[in-house]
Amino acid sequence: MYSRILVPLDGSPIANLALQHAAVLARLNGSTIVLLHIIEERIHSNGFERPRTYIEEIRPGFLAAGQKLLDEAAIWLRQEGMTVETILLESKGERVSVLIAQQVLATGCELVVLGTHGRRGVDRLLMGSDAEQLARIAPVPVMLVRQPQPVIATVPPWQGSTPT
View 1 (cartoon, rainbow, N blue to C red):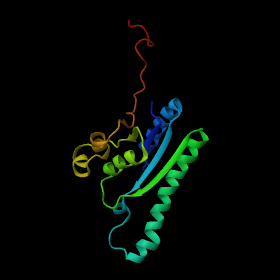
View 2 (tube, rainbow, N blue to C red):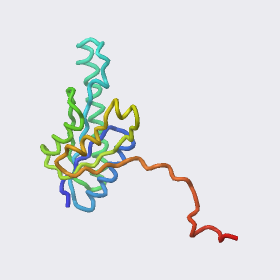
View 3 (cartoon, rainbow, N blue to C red):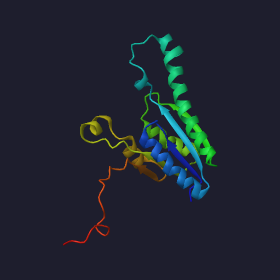
View 4 (cartoon, one colour):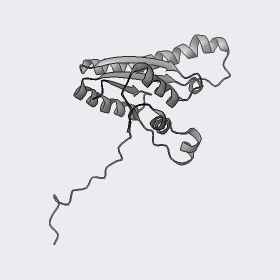
């Protein structure tokens, strides 16, 4: 059904969970997984470092970390017998959701699988939701994976004792 699946990764547990879901789909369909990591430079810079320091130390560090994240995920998928491609991008101030949608078109992917961070209230208003925005603008279906809620250990009624 889906021959190419795009999976944006940010190193978070929820992104890893989304990757696991994508891997299941890829196994079922024989799909190629395209891993994408987008670096938001403003997260790695306070704007006060000297340009030379940024160019020679800071930027190479976050590029290497991003590539390592992609490489580790790709190794795992390949060991599982899947075909994988990786893409490392710098946002240059563009919104992450827009960059993901652009990569969908550029790579010919037919599905995006990504994790949501479940922001609520003020955080959601201030930061926005890239997952929500992507679901609105993506040219293909988007599968949003969220962290499962903790389950309270209870015995189902059909396994419990009979009422007296």
